Image (cartoon, rainbow, N blue to C red):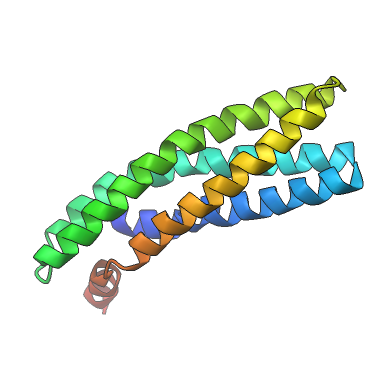
Length: 155
């Protein structure tokens, strides 16, 4: 498995996890369930952490894709656009990691500002989903013949 294949395998976990974590946190907030809020915050935390290896593997994936015979100027443009959006999202990812931990701590300590931290985390996670949608869509626009080529090499 090369880095492009690894990148394609793990890139959905942060997207799906942050969506699930955000919805779960919103429902937990509405139901006023401290246990559910903590679980949702852990989901947001781990999903955001998974964006780090996803982003890191993107550089190696780019190297693989750039050396394919059918790599075009249009492919390069799509790749660059995807990379720019991913870099922008990483700032949000780091903030979401810290927000999740801080909110989890406040919730665990039953601090009276915990409910405000939960609201901020919900809003921030929803904004992150919008950005992630752009990152995912731009990545999906890139052709992935490296997977087909790898599969054909085995046969």
